[in-house]
Image (tube, rainbow over all chains, first blue to last red; front, top):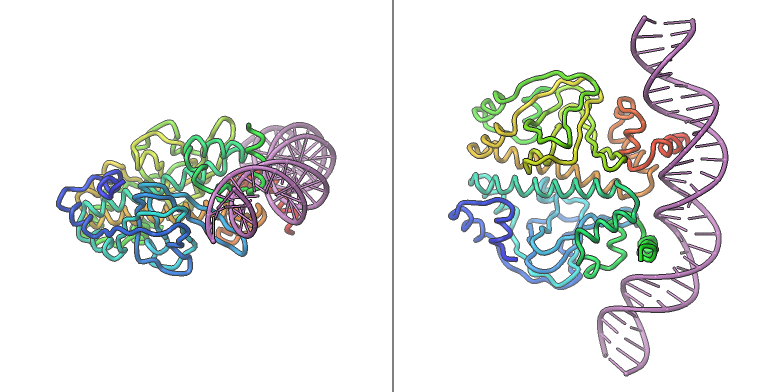
Length: 187
Length: 187
DNA sequence: ATCCCTTTTTATCATTTGTTAATTTTTTCC
DNA sequence: GGAAAAAATTAACAAATGATAAAAAGGGAT
């Protein structure tokens, strides 16, 4: 998935502005297991996934919560860094070798302030992430862990093959042992 | 909390633009228990709470999930209507008589397209809601129901007095009976 | 103050999920 | 291909939560 398509799927920008925008991106490749966002540091870039898969998670005491998975076309972002310019609560690690598009938050901010099309792209970007976040919240409140697992299977059928079971479990809010039991019971 | 303060706490807009913006708002009063957003209809307005408290919820089969509570300064919005212009999944009801500021989505959209300050206000608005949504997700994944209740108490101490217990329980993802048990156990 | 209706608490039992640990299966690397 | 490591499954018991029902407490209207 190239950067042009990624930007377009969020909001259509006039040609000249889009070119300015695209010029700010740099393409990088990072290895599997790389910890690209650390909760204790302000991250000064935002990334889009050209190829690969990533996982956002938070740790508290010794517990770990998976917040989201990102696949091709999705974003790798520390919301606290991006929005509040503060260190935050999110870690993001790459679950496969990834090709990423990288842009600095500083460049983004300055584009937002100068170009109304890009400002509206930024608005749409946040809005789409917001809808996703709300859906995640609702489906994790709803029904049993079994139902949530089945829904995840339906919505992201390839995820289960790409991601270790324990991480899926922590995304569903249950333990790995519990998810394994659920899988045995629905066969 | 007046509309001027509400807008300012999201993003500072130049004076002339803000005046244009504020002129689009209308002030209304609605009674307790009024269902202001219905999941089966596209809602063509967005509301801000001047005074009162509201609850967003979804129903599935016969289960009901509380998504969020809104207090003074918060927003009453159907994300699907606002962002996708589609009927959605959210219902919002007023838990007290409320004074609200109302603006049409159409006016908002047209301000976004014409005024870069207001476009950036819209971006910041979505970004702040996004951070809130992510926090909700994380805290509902974390720890026991008891811990989540205690955290809610700390963060929104007045909420418990204003809102029936069953609704708080459905926000925490547990039953009302279970929450009552928890309250008995922590005294 | 009293009655009615709603909300909250308490109790009991069933079900689900957590915890720990051992075993099996799969993956990785030499 | 085989050894070592990682991941997934299974088992047994403990703990938390759900479901249902009944009792107690609280609130509003007359």
